[in-house]
Image (cartoon, rainbow, N blue to C red):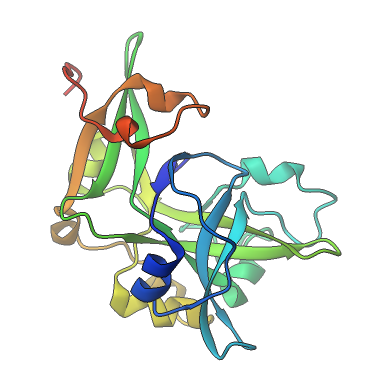
Length: 225
C-alpha cells in the first residue's frame, strides 16, 4: 500500500507541469503526507473547460457514507478491483484524478528491525499517481484515494504493492473517464520503473509529527538489503 508520501511543489509549479488552472488553496510542502491530510490533486472541470489543480482530503469517502471517519481506511484503491467494487466503481467511471507526488515511502521488516525506504525519480521529476475523487456531504467535501498495483522489478523488494504511476501521455485518457479498465490500469513497464531510485532513509519518517527535507536524507547504514 501507499500510506505515506511526499509532495513539496508549489501551486505555480504543479499548475504549469500539469497544464491545469490553479483553483487550489496555497499548497504547503510536506515531506511526510499522512492519511486524512489535505493533498493536491488534478482533475477535469466542466466549468473551467479542462484540468484544474485543487486539494482534497486523502482518504476516499463515498457519497453514501454516513460520515468522514471511514476515509482513513480508504487511502488506496486496488487496480484489480477498483472498477467493480461498490465503493470505488462510480468514481472510477466518472471521477478520476492525478495525485502529484515527489515520491513515496514503504517499510521493510526483518525480525525486530523496520527499515524505511523512499522511492523517487532519480532525475527529480514529479510523479502523477492515478487517483479517484469523491464529493461528500452537503458541503461537498472532496476526498481522494491513490490507486495501487502490483510492484515490479526492484520495487517489489521493498513492498508487493506500489502506486499506479501514469506517464504524461496517459493523463488525458485517465481523466476523461470511461475507457478500457485493463488498458487504463496497466502498470508502467519495468524498464521505465528503473528510473525510480530506492533510497533507505532514517526512522523519523515513521512518526507523522515529523516533517521536513531531512526525512529524505539517505540512511547512514542499512543492513537489510
